[in-house]
Length: 301
Length: 275
Image (tube, rainbow over all chains, first blue to last red; front, side, top):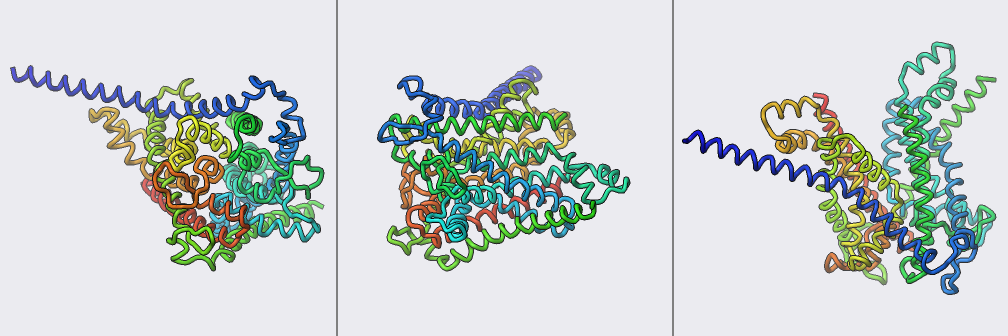
C-alpha cells in the first residue's frame, strides 16, 4: 500500500519534471528564434517602407539611384551624389586606415617587446570603445580647422575631413582583429623561414602575413562596415552639400547623413525615400557581409 | 638592396605604430584638455539649462534608463537563446539560420536600427519618440553581443561537468541551473558589460527613436536625450566644443570603467578555468 503511493508520488513528480523540461526547451527555442524574428522585422519594415514609392506611387528607381537632385519640396529624389560620397569616403578611409592599421598590428604582434605591446594594445582597444560622436567632435574641432588653414578653404568640412575621421575610427578595429590573426600563425612557420636564412622582416611579410591573410581580410571588412555605417560623426565633418564631389575638398553628404538629418521632419513620400536610402545602404552592408562569409568559409578550409 | 628594403619596411612599421598611438593620445588628450574646465559637481549633478551653465544630470539619468531597460530585456533572452544553441539544439539547419540571423544583426549599421525603431516602435506600436522605444531598439542591437559571448562562455564549460551532473540523476534543467550556468557566469558577465559599452556609445539609433528633449524624463514614454546625443547636439547646434568635450570626459570615464571591469572579470575567468 505505502509502496504504491510512493511510486505514484514519484511518478507525479517525474511527470512534473518532464513537463518542466519540455516547456523550458520550448522557451529556449523561442528566445533563440527572436533574433531571426528581429532580423525579418527589420528587413521587412525597412524594405516595405522604402519600396512603397517605387511600387505604388510610380517613382522610377533608376531616377532615384542616378538622379542628382534631392529637393523633397519639389518632389525630386535623387541620391547619386550621396552614393558617390559614401563610396569615395569609404575607399579613402580604407586607403589610409588599412596600411596604418595593418602595419601597427604587425608591429604589435611581431616586433614590439611583450611589455610595449601590453601597453599599446589595450590603449588601442580603448580607442575602439570611444563613442563615435566624440570622433566627430574631435574632427570638427581639430581636423576641420586644420584643413581649412592648410588648403585655404572657405569651409573645412569636406570629403577629406570625412575620410580622415573614418580612417581614425576604423583603425582600432583593424589593429585589434589583425593582431589576433597574426598572433595565431603557428611559430613553426616563423622558425622554418628564419632557419632558411630569411631576415625577420622578410619572414613577416613573406610568411607570417600571407598565413594570416583571411584574418586580415576579416579585419578590413569589419573596419569597412564601421566606416560605411557611421552617421553622427560624419554629419559633423561632412558639410552636407548635395553635390557630386569632384575634389577631396568638396563638402559632401553621405547616405547615412541624409537619413539622420531629415528623418526628424520628413513625412509621406519624403520619409519613404529616406527608407529607400536605407535600403541602398543596407545593400552595401549585405554585400560586405556576403564577402565576409566567403572569406571566413575560405579561412575555415 | 634587400637590407635597404628591410630597413624601409621596418621604418614604416615604426611610423605606423607611432601614428596610431599619436592619434589615440591626441583624441583622448583633446577631449580632456578641452572639457576639463567644465567638469564639476554642479556640472554632473545639476539640471540642464538651455541658456548655458547648467549640468548634464538629465542626460546621465536617460543614459542609465536606456542601459537598465535594454539589459533587463536582452540579458535573459540572450542567455536563454545561447543555452538553446549550445545545450539543446541539434546542430542542423535551424541552428544555422539562427546563427546567420544573429551574425547579420551584428553587421547592420545603427542608423538602420534607428529607421526600424522609428517606424516600428515609435509609429506602428505608437510609443512615440521615447526612452522605451529607444531601449527596445537597443535591445535588438545588444542581443547578438550577449548571445555570442554567452555561447563562448558555455563552450568553455568542460563536458565532464555535464556528464558528472547528469550521471547523478539530475535533469537537464537542474544541470543547467546548478552546474553549467554558474561556471559560465564570468563569461556571461563580461558579455553584459560589453553590451553596456555598446549602449553608452550608441547615438544614431537613439537620435531617431528617443528624440532630443533635454529634461529629466517624467516617464519611460517621454522623449529624452542621452549623453552621446547631447554631445552631438551641442556641437552641431551651437558649436560648443567645450561642453561636448566635457560630456566626452564623462563618456570616456564610463567606457574606461567598463573596460577595466571586463578585463578583471575575464582574468578571473581564466584563473578559474585553468585550475
